[in-house]
Image 1 (spheres, rainbow, N blue to C red):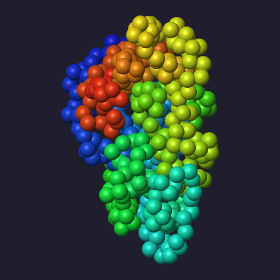
Image 2: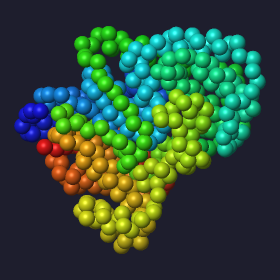
Image 3: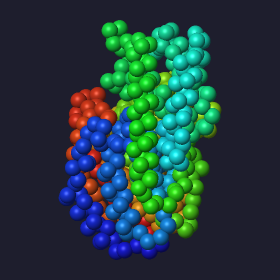
Image 4: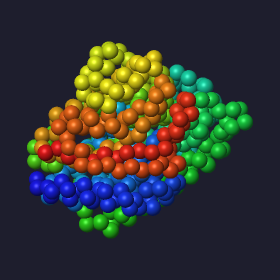
Length: 437
């Protein structure tokens, strides 16, 4: 794989940073066209920004490459890679995120979603059963008897669709309907019961589901229209549902790796509870259509998935802290400040170590050259600003990477909490571009 001079890449990225396209600040539906808006997943990246940066990196590469996102979420980077005909590997511990990505891959492979919708509507209209097909801890808290019966009808109708890829697209619509119509508030990603006056009745659930199906159909049409106008080669995409620290990551000696990701900014419990967000849908979706099935331990309660994610455990916190002191000078300064101020930052220590361990493992699997594009933000923890941007840079350098340059971006309204527990704003993020020889 041949690359142009590093200065060329730095100049291109700096030019992009100083002339940021208006689309980077767009909010609402227009910010996430086609498959990007199939599910309103927490803290989604701006597709146009990731695509623009990816194009800049691609301009520096001569030869085969593969895009990797080790924290793939709902697949923003994946979708931009597939549109460009790039092979892709994504990893996520959350089965819902992995399934959403697999649904998008199915659309890319031209799954017949329109026929699937017809099948669902046909069977839903004829289902007179009054049974509830799932049971899990807290079901009666989050779903009334009437809504659980109707959700069971939808579930049975989706299960009648023969093609598994099409079913996954329909499960995504189902998951979005659950998000909007369960007894949990939509104003937060955590599970909190709605006030009685805001409970959603069956007639409203029906309208929301039908509307969600129509929107999913339109988004698949929009995406397939992009493909029809493209001369791309057919890409290969693979989603791995598992912990990045232990997942089996494919290696390649001949292809250049382009890692593009936005990792969690901290442990899920104190930042964004992806597990809580996904808990209800995961208990309704047919387990055989989830990637690799579902580990029952991850669904044991509303906190289990978040506890299994990066920084979810403070076990061996002192040992993890000691290693991070060696890895990152920035972390060392932060830790000393926390000690002076008598702040408990064990969760930060454990998250940073788990994050370091994840990147160390990814780097060990990248046998050839690579570019990394990583978007991070600085949150508050224990009353202190956590310099994640700078710690991330230290980690990249500790792994042998060379930090080319970075892009600073003010956050518009973003689908993530912009205030933490003590009210400090998270109003900017940094995208680091690095290279590995």
